[in-house]
Amino acid sequence: MPRLALKMMLMLMLAIAGLGGCSAEDPVDADLDEIDAEAAAEVAPAPEPVTPAPPPWTDTEVEVKRGSTIAEILQEQGLKYSEVLALVEASKDVHNLEKIRAGEVLTVRTDNATGSFSGLLYPLDRHGEERMLVLQGADGGFTAAKVARDVVRVPVPLAGSITTSLWDTAIGMGLGWDTVADLASIFEWEIDFNSQVREGDAFRLIVEEVRDASTGEVLRHDRVLAAEFKAASGGSFVGYRYEGSDGRVGYFNAEGMSSKKMFLKSPLKFSRISSGFGKRFHPVLKKWRSHNGVDYAAPSGTPIRAIGRGTVNFAGTKGGYGKHVRMRHNKTYQSSYSHLSRIAVRNGAVVEQGQVIGYVGSTGLATGPHLHFEFYVNGAYTNFLRQKFPRTEPINESERPAFEAMRDDLAPRLAAIPLPGRDTTVAAKGDDDASDGPSDADAGPWTEPREGR
Ligand SMILES: [Zn+2]
Image 1 (spheres, helix red, strand yellow):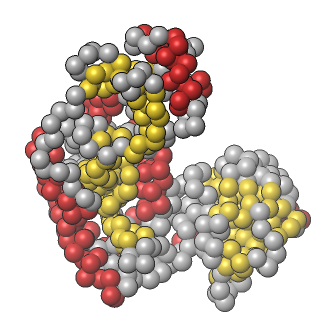
Image 2 (image 1 turned 180 degrees about the vertical axis):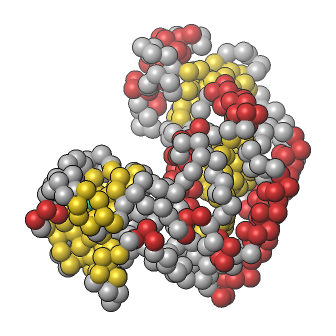
């Protein structure tokens, strides 16, 4: 990302923070940088404390404009046309520079002594962590190589307040799609984003910023180390990232219970509930019927996830259900998914939680594309939105001391992040509550979802 765009993004974040929409502490603040450097030492290898001597060159970023070619860009930097050809030829095995695109940012390196072109850096990935370095030798020839940028990972605090959706807010804060997906995956065990997120709900997180080790330029956000969701109505829960000695990564609450539950909160990631469980006027049959499931409105083709691990015991067409998948999770629980446009599993298949079993459609008796979802307890239709399920498993006892040390480090830092639009003293008190664990977390407003929205 060009440095200018980053600066503008930061300014925007700060401006929004001032308005109370969402807030992000200023990552360029000097004091914070000191704290962050300490924190980074625990989480990732710290940068050398000794300031290295400045390099004998200067790097300047050049954004590729629409319609401009590598020849134009490099000729503007003082290269002859024949040199451009030689440079492009020398680079070919690493990257074809004839195919640069508008918006890409090249870095032109100038020799401080001569003031003339000495090399070119070209980003090979989205964030420029791996780049191609083309250097011009004393003989005028060019050599190209892949170089990994020297980066540091610095945990930074962020907070946001939800206006329309978690997705919009987090993207608006400048978080990347991967980070937002991470965040959603921590929260989705506790909140159904389709029905339970309300304006004024807020969250805070500690996320790793990947920065250029020498310039400090922020390249991207990476792993979410800890995150807390606070509903405007009072409920709260927290998740800490922990990587086990076996390399498995998960999020756990303060008690070390996995954030994962037996069932996902919703078979669709993002959608809205168009019809709840219970009596309603059937739009196709034109009479009062008991609605034995929950309808999620979503565009045709939206992936449908199995809410839990289980075995497919029906996959095919079934009357008014249209294309229909039914799953048996254990002796007690079954779930089914109807009106699919396409089925992605076979009868008898063992399906993992979250695996895509099909896609939203409008087959069977349906007025438009939606998912009709049914949940059965001991064979009887049950309102899924009113069910409470236990967490799956606690952290391994042998890993508990390491987890608790990590949690004790992160918890006070998470609690210190001011929530937008909240009295900080209230926020601090709420945090003590949150670290009390699952009893408090489970007493959130989403334990009694309102249906029919
Ligand atoms: Zn339905």
